[in-house]
Length: 320
Image (cartoon, helix red, strand yellow):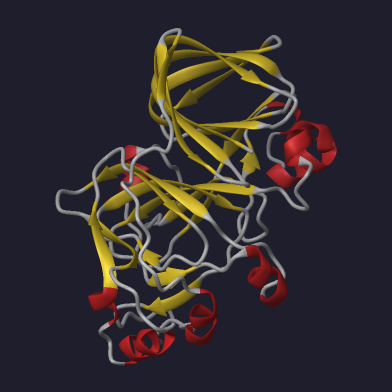
């Protein structure tokens, strides 16, 4: 097909809010939308195709029918589809948590680990998040801090601003704070080890499960240095400015501001994905046109070639 418009799967976790519905066009009967899984093959919430002959099918069903060629040579080097892209609206703080690396996750959870990045789409004044520890600590101290509810004392609290970029390797203790909306690009995994949950209870009225032993196994207890800015340069191309945000084995991400026209070569190495953060744009390639509004996402088959992006918009482009 070439360009596949996607509808998300929704999650109503207890810390979520309403801003994805109010500000990013999400249409669902859920009162709370904590996350929308924009580009997902994960069985916990696959995206749904919204255009063309596969409309109404799940995104995994499209990929199965289309064949491995749509993933590209790099995409096919992965055992499973490599990434998951989601929007997050944190009305309340998320739990203090950590994700395992590939080796541990494959051995214990039977899925891959989770390295991720965050782009701050918007945030309330004074918002902050937790990113790693603020000093070197031992496993023994880490466990003691969890038990006596003083873990926050040794975590690095980082003020956030719209446009900040956070790259979070597996093993990094972290939590999104209240009042933040994020676009997250991550490995295709749902393995999360909850360390501290602010004493909250779930829908069943019971405290949510913690995963202390597993967290102790995988956590990096040394501080991580970061300026929370994009890793690469900003280049001007046609009617756009394009910034490389993050790159790792599983994904490379860009944020672009276009006012007019931009041509993007979706080569044979990797599929592309376009996530509109603001404004609207038209994607055109090989006689196909797909309109995307704020908050919408599309998958582009590998080897589609030159894809024309027209409009006034800010968007994220992700590939492997």
